[in-house]
Every structure is written in C-alpha cells, then in structure tokens.
Image 1 (cartoon, rainbow over the protein chains, first blue to last red):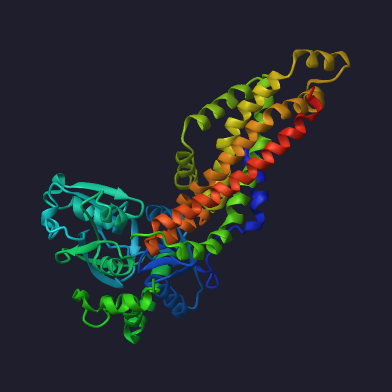
Image 2: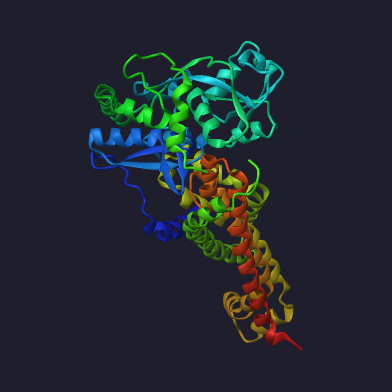
Amino acid sequence: MRTLIAPIALAFFAASGAQAQEATSQEPIRVGMSGGYVPFTFVEQDQLQGFEVDFMNAVGEEIGRPVEFVTMSFSGLIGALESNRIDTVANQITITPERQEAFVFSQPYVIDGAQVVVREGNAEIAGPEDLRGRSVAVNLGSNFEQLLRDLPYAEEIDIRTYESNIEQDVALGRVDAFVMDRVSSAVTIQESNLPLQLAGEPFSEIQNALPFRDDEEGRALRDEVDGAITTLKDTGALRDISVKWLGIDVTGSADAGSVAEPTSVESTAAETAPAE
Amino acid sequence: MGALDLDYMLGLVPVLLRYLPLTLAMAAGAMVLALVLAVALAMIRVLRVPVLDQLVQGFVSFFRGTPLLVQLFLFYYGLPQIIPAFSAINGVQAAVAGLTLHFSAYMAESIRAAILGVDRSQWEATQAVGMTQLQAMRRIILPQAARVAAPTLLNYFIDMIKSTSLAFTLGVTEMMGAAQKEAASSFRYFEAFLLVAIFYWTVVETLSIVQRRLETRMNKAFAR
C-alpha cells in the first residue's frame, strides 16, 4: 500500500519543503532540543529560548552557518540524530561511554552535577543514599536514569521514567523525588513556585556536550563546532551566556571542573522569569 | 499552585491559535487521503479482487489491530533504521501518513458495510441495463452508500482531529505540542492543558453542528 500512498503524500506535501540532503556551508545546522527544559531550552509565549539557544546561535555565528532549531520530545532526540533528521542535539547531553560508542562528542560546554529534588518539607531524603525504597522520577532516556541504575543499591530504588513533567509529579507527591542536573533543578524551583526543594549536595559530576553522527560529515561538523566552542570559551562569550541564564558559570571556561554553589541562581531567576 | 490563572490562560490563546491551522491541515489532509484509499480498499473487498483482496484484509487487520502511536513510532523512528531513505520524511508527513493508513483501515470497513447495505435489486438493475461492475459502483452504488457511510466517516474525522495530538511525539509542534511546551516552562499544567482541551472541544463541536446539518440535508430526499 505504501507505493500507493507515497506519490500522493509527496505531492501533497511538496510545498511544505522537503529538507535538502547535502550539507553545504550555507545549509543551516539542524539542532534538536526538547524545548521543555528550563532554563536550557524552553518555550514561553511561543518563543524558543534558553542557554542552549543562545549557545548554538553563538556557535552558528562563529562558523558562519545559520542554525535551525527542531524541537521534539527528549526521548526522540537521539533517534532523530541517528536517522539524520538533525545534525546535533543541544539539550544538556551528558557524555557517557554508551553514547560515545554511537556518537562523536564536542568538548564539554557545561560541567554540572546530578541533584536529588524532593517535595518541600520532605526531611527523609537528604541525598542519593536515602533513595532506597523510594520512587524516583527521571526523564526517559536521560543520563540520570543510567546514573541511578548504576548505584550499588539500584535494585531497591523504584525508578520511574517520564516523557515530561517530572517536577509536577514530585510536587503532587506521586513520586518521592526526581533526579536532574543541579543547575536546572535550582532554577526550576525558583521559577516554578512548585513546592520543591533540593535534597543534599550534587552527587556526580557530569559533562555535557554536543553529540554528532559518527560519520565523515558528522566528524567534520564536530571539528568545526569544537573550534567555535574553544573560541567562545576564550572570549568569555560562553561564560556570559551561562551567567545570563543560570546566574553562574558552569561552562568550565575559566576554572574548569568545579561545581559552583547555587547561591546566585536566585538573582537570575528574578531576571529571566516573567513577573507572575 | 492554587487558583486558576486566567490571565495566563488568555495569554496562551493567541499562541495556540497559531498552531490550530497545522492541526486542522494535518487532519484534513489525512482525511482526504484516507477517504480515497478507503474507497479503493472497500471496492477491492466488495468486488473480491483476487490476491488484492487478501492483501487488503491483511492491511486492515494490521492497522486496526495495532495502536496508532505504535504505528507512528514504527513509521517515523523505526523505518529509517532499515530503509535510510525514509529519514527524508519529516514529522508532519509521517503523522499524516500514519493517520491516513490507520483511519483508512477503519473507514474501508464502514464503506464496505455501506456498499453491502445497498439493496441487491440495485445491482440487478444495473446489470439489466448493461452496466459494468465499475460503472454500477460509481454511478449507482457508491452514491447510495455514501449517504449511509457519511455519519460514520465524519465520526472518524472527529477522531482524526483529536489524534493529530499524537504528532507531537514525532516532534511536530501542533496544538498539543505547543501547549506541552508552554506548560513545561511555566509549570502551569492545568491552565495549559485545560485550554488545549477547550480548543479541541470547540473544533469538534463546530464540526458536529455541520455534521447534523449535513445529515438533515442528505436525508431530505428520503423523508416520508
């Protein structure tokens, strides 16, 4: 039946613009992101914005190619990258050995930690070691899911994977905690007004970078983007973007590796969040 | 938390309105394609075209027997791994193709039932005046079957409009996708999802009114 449909469907959508296949320097870099991850990539009043958006635009400017943002559910991003629907994913993708087998990564542009977040007033969970026997929400396909599964007592944790809205389910008490990166956890608590709190210190350093397909084209783009990131780090542009959205520099631009204290996040939240 | 934020909801109205055309276009496009396909499938089954009949039965069985979401994922994420050329299909096209195939399976069955519901004497009459099977189908049988099938087909169209919301799982920002993203950044889930529900409801209600009018008109000739 496909043969019957294809010509009709193609004719029908010829106008909707099939993407050109070959990437030339004029072609936009197709960047996938979820559009639902405050403050890195999110939509407010139909406006896609956030750290990743500014970062990728800066990268695009540096290498002289326009950037086209494609939003889709987080768990679909890696599949879209693999199937050549996008060229990279700017969604705080953490470098892991599994992912390195399938993709080539740029240098890290965010160095962060994993954070347990609980409902406000929950004094029973003060860190990852207290997650035994608890239900914990993580985003489907995220590195935090793997992080939890790698804990020695993983079998005692009821890990629940979500497509979205993990914050809401913890606030409602449907699950005991969620695990996400520390920076967006802190900003989320500030901006959402949901009854949430950070539980203890971040527990694992994570390095986030841009993945590319492991083929000739992908590696070439990676090298180009990597150069741009180095420039952005040297000029301080990347630090400015980080401070603008997160209140602190987490990009490892100057003193790499250290996870800074979230004290200054409050002031950014006030700046970036619309008064509600 | 707490009270309903009406201002926030009102602020989202223009945002969702911007995505309404895409939702409607996907539904309308898929409906047209599904209708064409469904009529063809139904005719193959009614006329018992050898081989094709068996293929159609398999087709209908598969697309009725598996969830639309599974079909969309299979089509959009699965196929390109086997046949790389399929990655050229974008989310909107994949959603329309998925909706078309899925609903054509259902629609073919109700069109087939409507065709079979046309009185036998009508067939005999067409044979008596020397029409071929295809002529009879096009001139006599299908027009009568259409009247019978119309309400069911419009029901499928309503279902289709609502099913376009699944396209957001393929990365298409249609109404549901837009609402989901706004909710994820504002954390005002209730307002965003309530508003998108009202949008779908309004569209479907409008269509139901059209449906009722249409039925009255089509039945005029048969009123006693």
